[in-house]
Image (cartoon, rainbow, N blue to C red):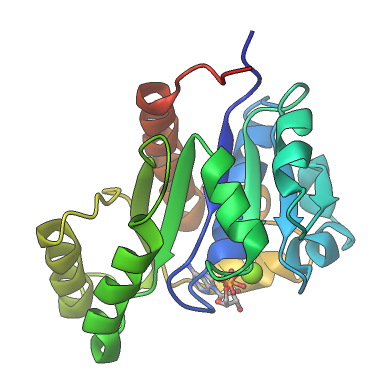
Length: 220
Ligand SMILES: Nc1ncnc2c1ncn2[C@@H]1O[C@H](COP(=O)(O)OP(=O)(O)O)[C@@H](O)[C@H]1O
Ligand SMILES: [Mg+2]
């Protein structure tokens, strides 16, 4: 039988919200009664540190591995946990490329910025082309957006036009994320009825849907 689903969070730019996205999805599924795990493949160890604070990410285990062996770690964790979410340093590291190869789904957070739409599209090309073997399943998601922003709408249509699939849900720029992180928590834990928690839940549902379409049994 195949193990649990593996998700990789890769990026086009630093500070785009990878670790926030990974921790929020994991905590959401944990609170919903699931058994997610996080793998911190970023040498900066944001998730490892987060899990050491007071609320310890609602008990989601965080495993540290920023080496090429992250694939073996992810597969191993997937026997006991699902989904296994790999938070990466960025797409230039060996661990990121390895994580993307093993993942059933790659989620790419995009922070809308008016200055670098073209750079973003170029790097998206670099990220998704040249993937050997099975076709990579990926989705972009807008993060740290301002509600009803013209920039976000513009970037949404640029991404769609360039053939990069995008989740409908967005993670709006909200103070709740940073405030929760101070205590090793996410908005789903600190303000379960709040707007941020609802956005996370909506995104999680879209991710589940994409995973159910994406999953092919792991060969072996
Ligand atoms: N939706 C959001 N609203 C507000 N702040 C956010 C949001 N997402 C991320 N941040 C903040 O932006 C910064 C970078 O996010 P982070 O998840 O660490 O990015 P990355 O892992 O890609 O470097 C952090 O300070 C984080 O708290
Ligand atoms: Mg990070």
